[in-house]
Amino acid sequence: MEALDRYEDRGLPFVAFLFRIARNAAIDKSRRTRPDMSIDDLVNHPESGQNVEAEVARSIEREALFNAMSKLKSDYREVLLLRFVEGYGAADVGRMTGRSEGAVRTLQHRALDRLRKELDRMGQLSLFDRISATRPGSAAPGADAAE
Image (cartoon, rainbow, N blue to C red):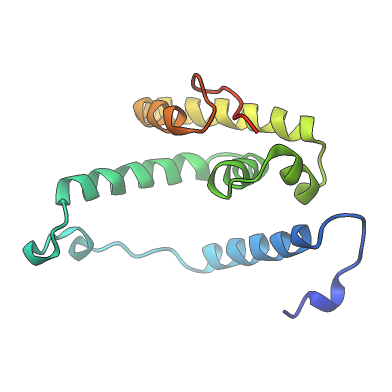
């Protein structure tokens, strides 16, 4: 809210301005705090009906993906998050980040390739294969998502 008075219409959508503020706030917060993980987070309480093994496996996969993503350049992380977590199309991501649609697709391709290599280095390539198989419109790992 404090930054609203600094908005200047530069031909980009207002949501791009808001995204930049949210992105910077998230980066600032992540620098200030690290998530605490306790063994209690992994304990299964029988009354909860949770599948502890599946939860632990997902937790390990999330941590591996987080670690791999943290090693990527910030531009790569940004494009992957906007495209595959937030679900924006390449043209929308281009408008938000000040890039052309083609540049976003190129950046996405390079980011996916780097993510695959990082997960392979960590011994978690099967995680990349599972993620790639669930992407809409992907025929193979690294294929561009259909818009």
